Image 1: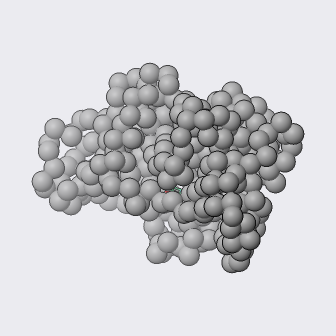
Image 2: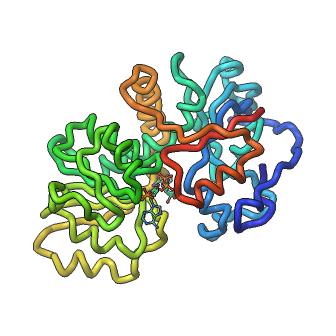
Length: 318
Ligand SMILES: NC(=O)c1ccc[n+]([C@@H]2O[C@H](COP(=O)([O-])OP(=O)(O)OC[C@H]3O[C@@H](n4cnc5c(N)ncnc54)[C@H](OP(=O)(O)O)[C@@H]3O)[C@@H](O)[C@H]2O)c1
């Protein structure tokens, strides 16, 4: 699948491309599952400044499947192994994907490829975002934008990490119920209202949303509270949002951005492997919204745009 035109999902079209050849340090993976991420939709819409992409680019960044070929300098023992891989800002919506061997992690028995692409990016982002927010047992946590794969992972990790309370924002009662099943203790609407029993303030806010309402969530930080911005699905916050922190100077609140790209690859891979093992043992849930054929990528993006996806949509080659 390539983005033939930026804009609506109809710009995603099937093309035939030659079999890829791995360069030194790379592997080729016969894909069994391809994760559809919120960032893919942003790139397709053109709202990420096209991320350096031009039309004709294959979107997607995470796949799972079996290694079919390796490039120079790569141990041939990888051939035939089931793996998860990060392909970069593109290259995943394909029957054959190429990845640097440093971005490949072996899959344990008992974890399906579909589960792997549901957890492989999201869990490390959530894990290191919580660490960036100096999350500790007993902390009250708010996950803003909890219905996506990063938010779902953050909820589960906060619960496993012994959070005192785990509140979530969602626009849907049904998704709120699903999030409660995953351990959320309070379900709020997108404005952060709707549950009078929720803590009035939070030690850690993991924020996937950004956008115009971000300043009102800075106001929900406890003294010494930390808001970690991991995504901006609602766009940038107002340019003067930092004024809210300065106006409450004596509360010692913090705002931080967090990108997984700042975490050393070995640390990311370790956390990813641990999450795969935990999921294979039933300690983490991979929440799959739907599994669609690869050539239905436009349908997957329509559903992303409609905002009714809970967790991950996964594509599989026929
Ligand atoms: N920091 C990193 O290293 C990293 C890595 C990968 C991706 N990302 C970023 O993470 C984001 C995607 O994460 P994701 O796939 O988990 O999210 P997502 O599924 O795209 O969105 C999460 C939830 O946010 C809510 N939402 C959507 N639009 C909203 C709006 N206008 N106002 C308030 N809430 C809204 C929706 O839930 P409800 O309708 O239930 O409210 C949605 O399910 C992107 O911004 C991407 O760039 C960051």
